[in-house]
Image (cartoon, rainbow, N blue to C red):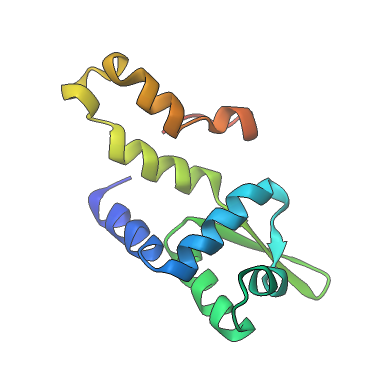
Length: 119
């Protein structure tokens, strides 16, 4: 991930409803949720949630797929991992082994998303 993409992703998360939506979708895993269900669980208007989910999608943090008449949103694990990796890639002056506990805490995605490489 480059600096411009990181700024876009962090900007997308720098709003309360979007951060709450992202965290909700993280909990749901790859199955995701329909946009209407995201709105219901967050107590937000449907049209507002659609806008927020679109911003998260443009930032590469969320992906959508169509199932019948519903649009299902799920966290884009690669985008989330890339952002976290960008934030910690120079941890401890380029000695990531010194920061292993931080990196493992930030990137436990192998447990929920097997088969995907780390950033």
